[in-house]
Length: 274
Image (cartoon, rainbow, N blue to C red; front, side, top):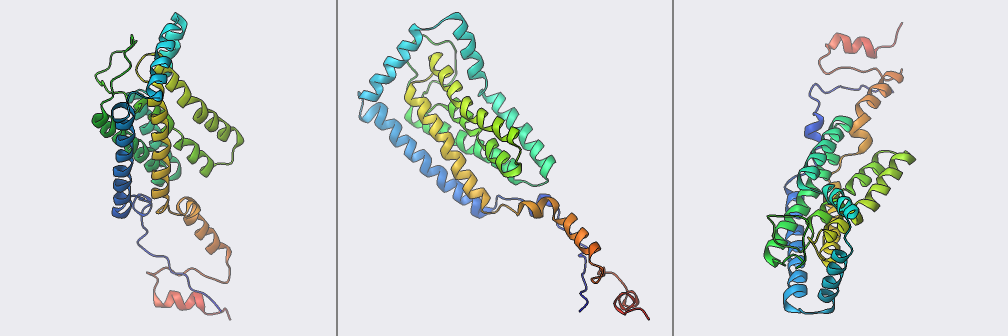
């Protein structure tokens, strides 16, 4: 039996068909944000106000003072570079660059949205929670001046942890051992480096950086799970059109008939030769 394939004259463009953030996803993200902020407010208030003083706060103070006592000129320089990796202009610029490269390379929104939405989710949760908790920064000599006086959680460490979305993308899109190894090394090393740097500079307590790293992980898990629910098929979004064309051209017994073909043309293609 001969099959007639009709090409549609209106093909949906990739920036419309692959958009992953709709009302349902946005509602789930907002609900998750409210829950995360509420949890962090409760933990922050319990840690610094409701249950203070406590063993965690005492250990925080001891660790902050020990880091200050161990400062050296060379370590000061290393801490400056370590904290620089998660500064706001750096994380925004790098995220925009990587999102743009993902759009250019794969012609779909999922990877770019995963990078951007996760960073926005983390930053929003950090700003709201830290503003409500208002934990003072460590009472030690600081190596930096900051317009933000709150300490819990650490936004720098949360942002450094969010970079782990790059590893998710790498593992989804390539099987290159080199690319995967570099991604894993960056994900494993970056958050501890930033955490040490921020504590060394007197900007955060140990519990602040732990809470920041946890916030980054939670942000990744939440955004990844919500956005992937509407993730278009990877192969279909990137190579589906080419595969359909190749399949059609290789099937000699299935001629392609365009929708705007005339009746005579259709009969001529379907009738067997004399």
